Length: 314
Image (cartoon, rainbow, N blue to C red; front, side, top):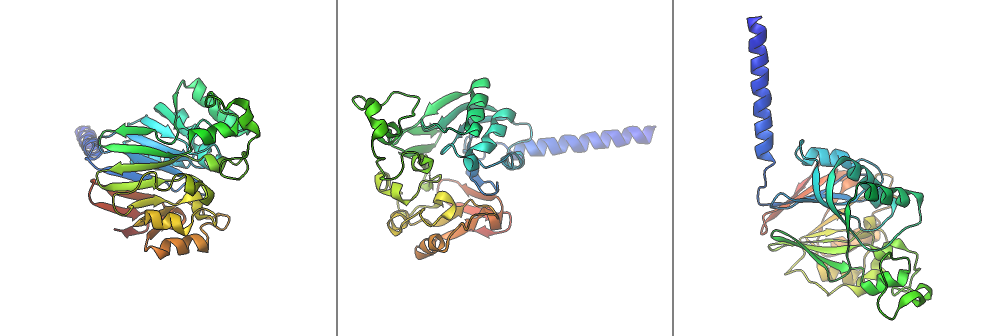
């Protein structure tokens, strides 16, 4: 009996030590941590800001993102500061349903664009049922989280108004006539990729651009509106590295040191040779979730480091 009690005591002390170490390890460390989660053929990222607040960007096509969050968030933490969805398509949206169900979320960031799918309707039902506040963003908006700033480059308010199914009021003088106008990009008004949130994240001298599925015909409408201070440290490659995702002018404008491609093993030919060649033309270091697993980028605002589950780089 005495030995049994000693065993329980040692086990309890060991468990307590593990909990203390885990708690200390997860305290804010003054660094920015960006995790590009391996969610298969889709996008899903977790960002922990230097002050400990956090953000999820897209959720992938299923609940795989929960494994990523479970690994990189403190095990006792069930709170996320805010969630951003680049656009309402399944490979970016579906996993967020599980995130909203499992975590308390302060607010939800998105462009004021709706979809007609049953999956989207269920997605909105969860947000309404959980009473999560929504923040609609347009080009020119900013969100500041401590020393980190998110600047939204796209879509513009004019572009959103042209879709005609916005839940907010259109621009003054435009009204319903916009429903029948050609999309500002010259493509179908119904193409959701054209409305992907594009935002620029800055922490000190570290810069990152998140692009969702915004394709190359979107580029002329926001390139040059906000420039990296020298050379972009991180680019989340548009549209999984599709053939139409980027142009040479886009890559030359950003000149990224690191390019992350979120893509699955069953990837519809993504990333294409054309996209990879563009990235090679500026010497970008390429990481891919289908080959490198979940990818972590860490920065103290000056220096940065990247590592995948299978690869490490600077």
